[in-house]
Length: 255
Image (cartoon, rainbow, N blue to C red):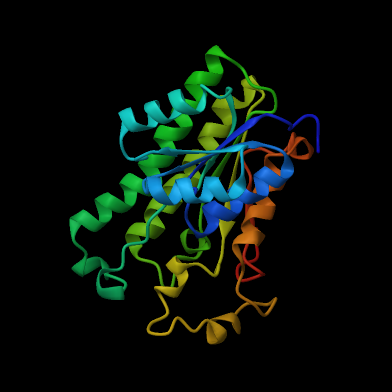
């Protein structure tokens, strides 16, 4: 175990989801104490229970300012949070279909931005405010972008694409503003990852074999692939990496 990591607290929003739960598990293995934060409290408690005594479960609605503040109050009763990973996100597909712009209800647009963009803003702002008054060694923030935001998307809605684009732009502004505190901020941008969110976009049966043919590495990504990139970014080895986007997409998009 890295002594620079031992006993530090990592807070993961959306911690009970397909990617979030794997990220929590990876960070526990690395040596962090982990806060599993999620709208679904019982699911968060289940994930934390499986991870053992170094994991804690707390409720959060990332779209609500007071809920985010309450989450940090609870998390920092353990120890100051030194790592924040903003995984919480939504892709809204009414009836399983991608809504076209001309047909999209305003509610879908607003909800997408509320969870994906506002949630990332509120959580990272609260982290920054706390670290301004109580600095943390090796402070790290990781945002979750999307290859859909970089490509215009094929299965994702315009609301999801736009909200993830907002997150990726915000992350760069954030990285500049927190650098003087020794905090880094980066984006992990997943491509096609085998989650319920992806399977909801491929129709009945959720068969991803055809989709995988478009990926140079010949397979759909896993939550473990995403967690590995996050694990690196929150490590001391990534101390000189900030304002960057790490693509985890098997070559689906190359830059």
